Amino acid sequence: MVRLFDAYAGLLTERQKRILRLYYHDDLSLGEIAARAGVTRQAVFDSLRRSVSVLWLFEQHVGVLAERDRHARARQLLRDVERAVAQLADTDNGNLAPLRGALRALRESV
Picture 1 (cartoon, rainbow, N blue to C red):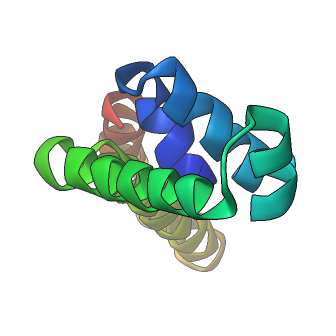
Picture 2: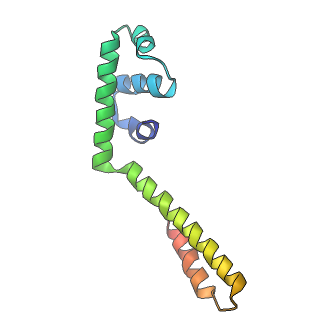
Picture 3: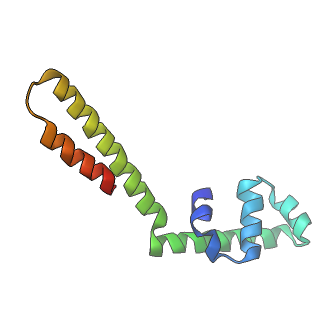
C-alpha cells in the first residue's frame, strides 16, 4: 500500500493523503486518526477503504508499479546473465567480446 501511495499520492485529495499517511506510514489506529480528525472511526474506515480502492484503480489503469516491477525483474535477469557470461569467460577461451558488448548495450537501455 505504501508503494501505491508513493506512486499515486499526487492524484489524491489532501484529506485522502492525510488519512492514508497516518494509517499506513505513521501506523495510527482508526480511533487515533478519528480523534485527530474529529470524525468517527467509521468515517475513517470508509475513507481508507475508498482511498485504497482509488489507488488500486489508478494502478489498474496506469500500471506504474507493474512497470517498475518489470524493470526490476529485467535488471535482475540481466545481472544473472552477466554473471553467467563472466563464469563462461573464466572457463572458456572463446571470444565473448560481442556478447559482452550486447549485454552492455542492454544494460544501458534498461
